[in-house]
Image (cartoon, rainbow, N blue to C red; front, side, top):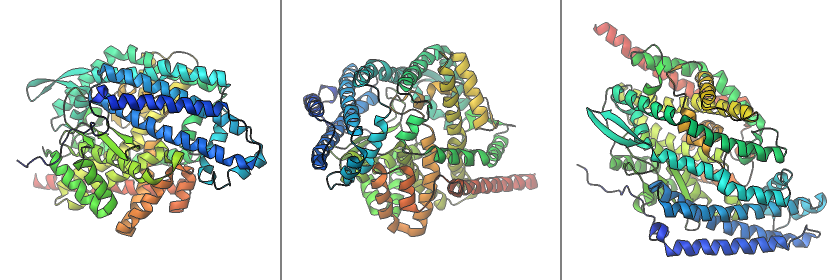
Length: 607
């Protein structure tokens, strides 16, 4: 057996020793409360600018905001990590409440500043953002000016901010606690095992179909039993959000997510148009895979199944070595960063039942670190989850030298960096494959990601659109949510999926993220965008790493359309851009069908 070289349990003590009991962390929160109060006092005494010489005052306030955000992110990331380790940690839950309260006051003060600045006379405003003090924050200030037009009165915003802590965000936290507490009994190799939801969902790629099917049915029964409870949580989250939209006179539920992703509606429309246009090749892939499984139609529980009978397992040690080897072929900085993450205990990958089921990357900008959380199960899907989260962490690393509030980047670009890392590893594995069987195995894994982004994510988007439409008229029952989910899955998969999980509105955590509505289309954006970036990386070789880092560093200071145009010279409001990436994915389907058909012909001739 290979000696364990890489730890699978992360190090949080180097951030704040003694976990939730940490004196250092409690002092950090106290310091945060103090500097947030000081910011509030400064904004209270600040008035609408009248002279261009006031630019330095605005710059000082922005620097204060940047400093608070860095310290606040350090705190909230730490609490997130504590709760992921043990979702029932009561002291961590208490700390989460304190941090949420501080954040509410902070966000309220930012909105107050935005409103004050929005009253600046247009001519003076244009001169102010061109000053040396503010030029680097020009994009953010313009964004703030636009957001200020949707804000309520100070009193209403203050009330909304406070209600969010114990209402809106609390529902999201309750969801995470409930989903993490779920335990199911699954028969594996003749033995009943008690598993967390995260462990049970990992069985979807188990080599034994009976285990996959048993896990799927068991989970569906759990969701059926608890659907009314989860329906209440989802309705409360959506109801609160819609009330805020109503008071802010926001007519479309897509307005906020598009603004948060710094993306135009034209871009989103062009992307989904291309996705819808190219559904047939992926239907063909699903039909071919179903046929290989002995079914007429793709069964939900078989989607993640390996198409070979191989029981191949990838140990954590081998996975890390493979990642480091192939990250090094892309660039020195990516390799060195990943090695630092593995060597310094930034990864929590141990397979145990008391953990949260959601993989994530948490940034710690104060110390220039990240932490990656997942449950590793010795399968290629786990390797890809690991590199996906490392991609997020590398994006955080790229932003280390960026000034102030320009560190914040949209979800769509964050999902680009994570997917790009996946592609490096998948492509490397395919190039190393020594047989048709091995190549098919990896090609299938690649195509699963295409299906997830073009079909599953599309179904999530369609479901959320329809759900919010109906939620405006009143509470949507659990049975109706099941119907909406079924309709969305049928549309998303173009009818190619059988026995789909109509309860996926329960176990898909993205619907319950209160900070980011419509946390779905950014994945498809990131997937297709990363294909374009990866193609350029293949052309330029290791020299591309600098261009890639420059793109990531600019991701917090310009619109998504400008980012792509400035760094890649591409217009993402055009369908032609999205078709370039889509055509690469269609070629994967054609190769898959060609190889599997050849195998069938060989079997027929042998018989």
